[in-house]
Length: 58
Image (cartoon, rainbow, N blue to C red):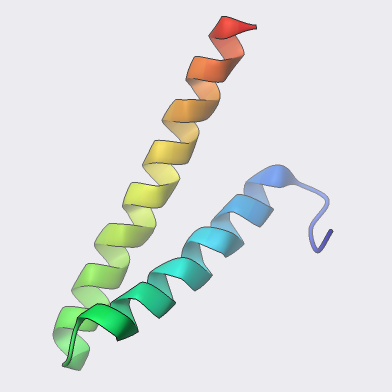
């Protein structure tokens, strides 16, 4: 494992996937940056929400 914290591993994964997807989908730098940031924060928000749901389901 690269990081000792699952949170940092999740952030790193979201960053790498967002960068790759933004380069695959968009063609100019401004759109890549905007799409990458939206995707990155969507990944983080979704993962945090999913974590809270799993916390309450036990």
